[in-house]
Amino acid sequence: MLTIDVADDGLVELVVDGAISREDYDRVVATLEAQFATHRKVNVVEIVRAFGGIAPALWWQEVKWSFGHLDRFGRCAMVTDSGWIGPVARTLGAMLPIELRTFGTNELAAARAWARGSD
Image (tube, rainbow, N blue to C red; front, side, top):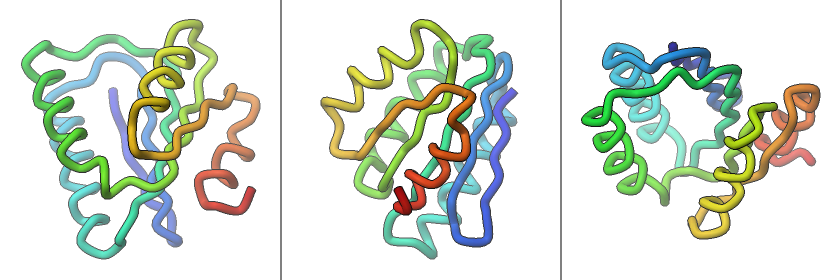
């Protein structure tokens, strides 16, 4: 399951908790596209509680869409206690033109503050 919420100040919060469906993905992309229409850059907090997989065709579509929109993202805070997701995110973040930082689940408030630029 993938959910999305947009705060009044435009901060986007994604929550991954299980498998990601086509419906989840389409809803998230539509919400992000709407945010891109009103904000030069979109800051994101992604909370990964549990990653239950994504269909290979959908994963490839996500990779293409995300790389095509990298210039539209500002700060991206990855919040997780999963043993492998944090290191993978940090490695990818070092190669991408976005600000990406990882946080433990007990640091959610700090992740939101950092993503908003109020660190």
